[in-house]
Length: 202
Image (cartoon, rainbow, N blue to C red; front, side, top):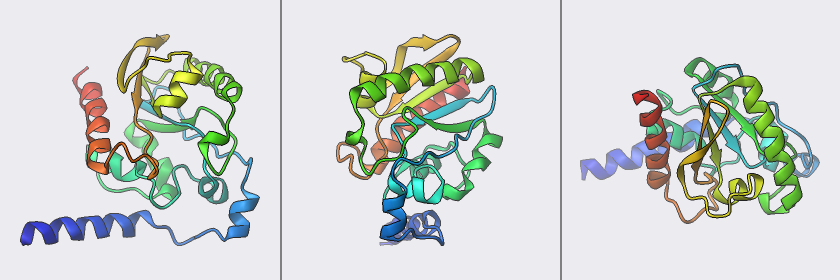
C-alpha cells in the first residue's frame, strides 16, 4: 500500500511541476502556427536533444516540449539527466548541465505529420551544419521516423547510430509526445538513461 501511494504521489508531483502558470487560449494556439522557438544552445554541450519541430503549445509559450502530456521533461528527470523535474520555462537551466534543445524543423505546427519530407530533409541539412558549428558530444534526435527521413536512413533503429557528424555521436530516441503509444514513460526514461550512462562512461 505504501509503495502504491508513493508512486501516485510522485506522479502527481510530476504533473504539478510540469504545469506552468500560463495556459494558452485556443486563439493563442491558433496564432502560434508557423512561429519558431529559440534553440537552447551553447558550444560544446554534452547532449543536444533535437525534437522534430515545435508544437502549438511551444509556439505559444516560447518554450520547448511545453504541451501538457509531453514526456520529455519527466523522462529527463527519471533518467537522471536533471536533478529534479524541470518545467519548460526553466529550459535554459539545462545549459549548466551540458544539455541543450533544438529541432529538425523550426516552424510550429499542430502535428508533426504536417511537415513535408522535403522540409525534414532540408531541416536535417541545417541541423548537421548547426551541430558542426556548436560541437556537442552527442546529438540525440527524438523521433525515429523524423531521423529516417531527415538523414536518409530508412532502416535506423532506436539507440546509438554508426553515423557521426564530425566528432559528434548520434543517438535516436523515441518521440516523447504523449501520442507515442509505443513507449510508456518508464520505457522512454529507460532509453534516455542508456544515453546518459553512455555519456558518463566515455
